[in-house]
Amino acid sequence: MMSINLFSNYPLSWKPVKATLTRPYYQGLARQMRADINNGLLLPGTKLPPQRELADYLDVGFTTITRAYKLSQAEGLTYGVVGKGTYVSPNVKTDLTITHQDNKNIQELGFVSSFESENSALQSTIINIAKQKKFAELLNYEHPTGMPRHKKIATRYLREIGMNVNQQNTLIASGGQNALTITLLGLFNPGDKIIVDQFTYVNFIELCRLRGVKLIPIPSDNDGIRSDLILKACQNDVIKGIYLMPDCNNPTTEIITLSRRKEIATIIKHYDLTFIEDDYANFLNLFREVPLIKLSELVPENSVYICSMSKPLASGIRVAFMRVPDRYKLQIELAMFNSTFKTSALDAAIVVEALENGTANKIMHRKINKLLLANQIFDRVFEQQVNAYNATSFFRPLHLKSKQRGDELEKLCLDNGIRIFHSDRFLVGPRPDNSFLRVSLSAVEEINDLTTALKRLKSIIL
Image (cartoon, rainbow, N blue to C red):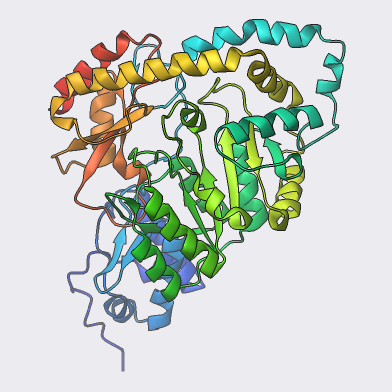
């Protein structure tokens, strides 16, 4: 007797075509899901059919659907909510990676650069380096993790911003993104789980997708990422690491309080987690009346501390200082050798010479003043958005009342001459009620152009 599929007319939110599935079926289902998302048949936020109902509809085993859904989550296509089901990710159709664009007809409020007009201040330092007798040594293969003199000055800078370091545990990477890449390659394997803020650095999200690492999102309260939920995640799952920007989260600008840092440090120690601290705005600690205590300082043996020099000096100089404990050093060095081979000693020389001759301090001081002014301009244009925030942040969250999809709002702004990024782009897991635009304050060529760009943005969205 021919079997009858009683679910053929059942109103499922997604009806894959079994006749076109390739074996193994769970992989074929994941491929069809990806295609249907790309073709607009499955929209972001859609709740997928319950696993048992979809298994009955396709006349396949329940475990086939379970494996397909798990694979889709691993690929970032979907996310699961305990007790509620599986949903298509809000940013699944968005090319998340954020890069600079060269369209002069577009006002840039999306990419967070570093006041590029200050780059010319490095010219005399670069000229002096080129005149040095040992200039040619900067161009060879030696000292792949940093020349001894460069490490000495890097170590001194790290101490100035609050880190306890020595030359032996200091490495010089090719920028913050490279430091994150080699850390993931060296210390994490596909399938490992890393705790992150619910809204986190978008390029780290993409790196983890490429590596096959699963991110576990944790929401925040007034003290920063919630330590009680971090503890719960560690109790209920096998967590390998945690990635945070404690001093100014990108994109929310949240700063984790000292009491919360201590709570997180206790959890990191107890569960022996690998902690990655991304301190992209490190130089701000030089100018704070009360410097922030780095979370890495509370758990030095578990921490990979990354100090990018792009924001302090110039984004085109790809240099980051890393503090790495002995237990991780060999794996990270191997990852560096096999991916980058060698950090540019020429780039590193520019950074350390600028630190030595005082040029870096002058640039940083001018950037602090520009950040203070830029944040004041934001406050004047968006008066209703003035809440507690970091007054020297490179960007600000602009909270929205509209429930419009992030990609649609980004396109609307772009069509009206403004490049901006929606919070969906930075989101890990289910979309919360609060959505916002991350507004860059440091990408305009001149600080006076910021008012014009912000007013145009206001006219578009409000």
